[in-house]
Image 1: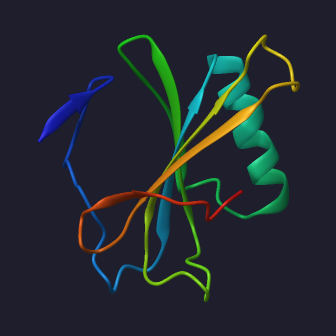
Image 2: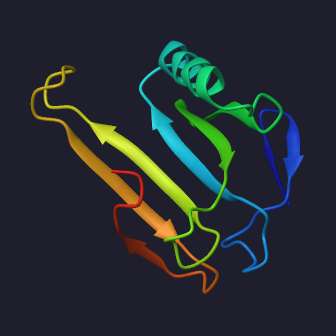
Length: 112
């Protein structure tokens, strides 16, 4: 158990192979960018009850559920961040690590 923003949560390091969805934990540079991201997700998917914004040690993250794609080996936890050279789209580096049911992280691009 851990406490994040006053909520008590169970820590997990992988999803069960039979989990109904995958999870995406995405880093954002600000709370307003995280909020805008979730608004965009909500515009195209019916996920309003399965997402949230979390702040940990001055870092902002969103946690969303999504359907596991048929070409993925199993339900995944996907950690995503975008790294910008100068806070613009030029020089953007996409960082993605996925964790499958075995609990081992691997660098891989499932979201692109």
